[in-house]
Length: 299
Image (cartoon, rainbow, N blue to C red; front, side):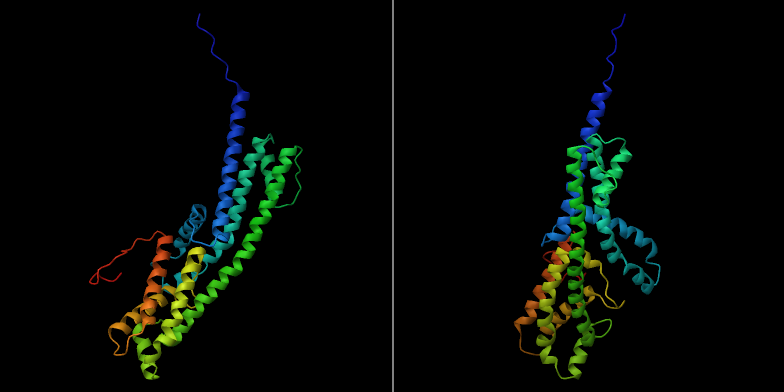
């Protein structure tokens, strides 16, 4: 006669699932809070995989309507909405993940069924209060979730003005270059216009000194607030990247071709410009040659 097989302990299995749900919920809530802090609060270039994933997935949806085969003006109109929509929907993603994480916490703490734990989580994070727990520890979780929900909303409200302030400063520089170098701007047009008005000798004062500070501001704002990189200019033929290229090309040609005394401000502008663009490329993990030879082709 074969020995009897042990009967699995269903209570032990359910307890393990509840513990796993609590651990997973804590990890998800902590990761979401770290994403919010890195994206909004931390004043430095800090990578957040959650924020990056949100923007990458959203961009895939926009690429469906902004295919390269479409005219540039049509693509520009579609992509102009990409960064604003990504920024506005980001807090909703954070809130949804917080609700999911606390749902696991409530269910793991004994709130049954799972749908009831979800309702309690949604009620707490939105501070609606239509579902009230009956356990002290669950009450504490509910208070914590309500505070986190209010905090995420408050962070986003304070975040938007700084984003648009940095955008306005960037576009002010791009607009000033349009006056000096045409639309779209070009290095040749810049030199032609300054020759016509007799101010070729004042390029350092009018352009290079101004854009040295512009590059510094762009580097700081576009790495600490990386969504700014995807905010497009109000006019489809204006771009902060194009403006940066024209200024750097103009500075290089001013040194190489213009028969005028040297000015250290031109060299400093070149240095400031390529350092700024490299820092932005580093943040987005874009490859480039950090030590190109003088005869290497332009990229």
